[in-house]
Image (cartoon, rainbow, N blue to C red; front, side, top):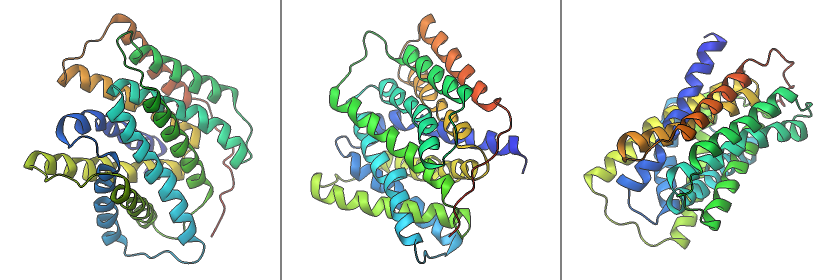
Length: 290
């Protein structure tokens, strides 16, 4: 598959993730962020594992656990909390900090210099998303904001470590390990800190099937395939498509309005995504082998 095709397919992941906020708020039981994250991760991980049937060995038990915690357990727990505590657009915009975090983490973890173009594109993207969603009517709950920042930092570090550690198995197996590890951690936390899950309605089951299937198993596989073959900064910039999608979904289905200023913010963000993709060829870091 060509490099461009891989990028286009990877871009589908944040677009699907951008629909998470309205699905959580309108179609799933409230006040169960960890429980919902566990129901999303474990089924997706188990289905993917059935396709690979690969078991971690040696250091990969630890690495799968670390990546499962960063990419899913910590990320989704705090993301879901932010989605409950904040308007969908505000929660999504905090994820726009992730590409900027990745720029610095690539320097620290992969020992690669900070590229001015990557830094500018990430900063421009964060600015564009702020213009898009931070309207005067936005509710800025402090704990929700903190949760959104922690979620962005967790996924940024997880993505960089994913690029550093080359798995000795198929990508499907690698992704399934992380989803299962992350899902088990979230389920344990939910059992301790959250009330019992209410009975699911048919609508709840359909929403979970969408999140676990398209929004997790499919989207995560496409995202990780992009991380395996492209610069981390390029793939992380695609994450800016998630808050744009969240706002467009809210405008289309939830009756939210879009001002000319917000449309300008969306255009700035798309420019930042394009800028990150056109920064030219650079040497790839040497991945650490098992």
